[in-house]
Amino acid sequence: MGFWSFWVPAAFMTLMVMALIALGFLRGRRLHEDGASREGDGAPAQDKRALRIYADQLREIESDLNRGLVSAEEAERLRTEVSRRLLDADKASKGSGQGPAAAAPSRGMRLAGLALLPLAVGVALGVYLFAGAPHLPDQPLALRHAEAAQTRAERPSQAEMQAAWQADPDRPEPPAPDPELMALIEQLRAAMATRPQDLQGHQLLARNEARIGNHAGAADAQRRVIALRGDEATVTDHVLLAEALIFAAGGLVSAEAERVLDAILRRDPDNQPARYYTGLMFAQTDRPDLTFRIWRQLLIDSDPGAPWVPHLRDTLEGLAEVAGVHRYTLPPVEAMGARGPSAADMAAAMELDDEARAEMIGGMVEGLSARLASQGGSAREWAQLISALTVLGQEDRARAIWGEARTVFADRADDMALIDRAVRQAGLQGASPSEDE
Image (cartoon, rainbow, N blue to C red; front, side, top):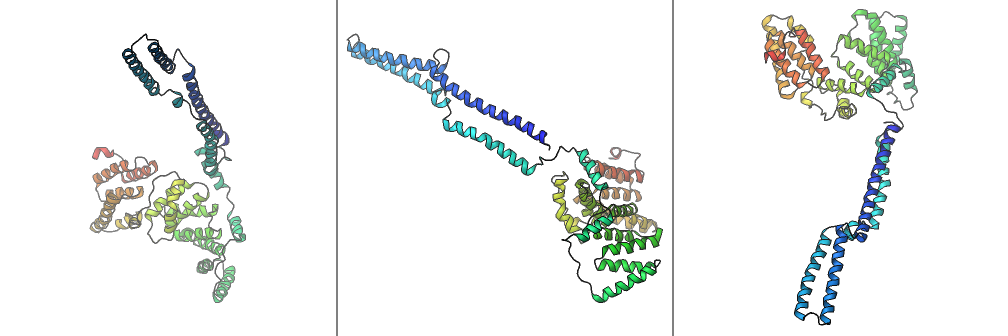
């Protein structure tokens, strides 16, 4: 929130409150004065005039009695009647609530009320300075996303990140390696410098450089491994390179590491290490909403013993608040890692004979269906269930699941898009789910 967008409305509201309080004090004082001075047009003045009249009548009765103009019995009757009227008038005056005691605030009350005004302003200012950001301009969502994209584009290079990490005085020193191991690694480095085509040698060098904490050296060796493998380089080869680059930069994800992660996810969208590091990259470039979206699903998909799980469980609830997602709760540990049949599972099943394939897929499908019904699950799992049911020839059931998913994920457009994509790929797009329910 910027300066003007906070202080202009705040000043206006403060002045309004001050004016209302001042008007209240003035009105009370005016009522007090009117009750004491008005004689012709207000109930308090009329009541006080009646009191004076009845008092004068009592004095006249006493005077007439003393002069012998009325008897003692007549004087007593008249005194009784006038006294009754006097009491009635006095009660009416007090019951109106407009007397001097009811209408006028005390001096102490007025001073206390006025003292509250600067206190209220001070409290508001303190809360804003603590919880707000008065030095920042207004930041609409589109602007924040644009600035995050700029931050991502202007990251230091991998080499710059590595140099900064090496120069960081707080960088923990890796444990001293065994002297014999270091001697072997030195020999291996020298050998690989003269044998650039030795695939196994570079693989061995990459593993051992990582083992002693020389992640920059491990990244160099792993780049060579991938270059030698060419098109046959595996997803694991790329994961090892991404991790070496990130560790060498002190945990930061550079543009080079991001490109490696993108290559992994193009080949294996479910790759868990790549998903974790991609979420980390978005956290480092001011997009906690994307980090939360990636890590929330990753936690559900991960086995409880996966190395990133403790970090996710410690981080996700706080990250949800930052990302604007309220009432998020961590999935129970027993629900983690219970995934349905993957694309690899389905491909393997297609290699079996009809009976074995039906038995294999059927067991996985029923387990997934039961878990989604009792515990719920991710959009990816709903999509997997729809695809698997289609493979089993249970198209009506797949459409029914699709219809149920449209209710479950009605307010989550990205998740529903994933499910609809699975429906199209399964060939169910010709009918609306409502037609089969």
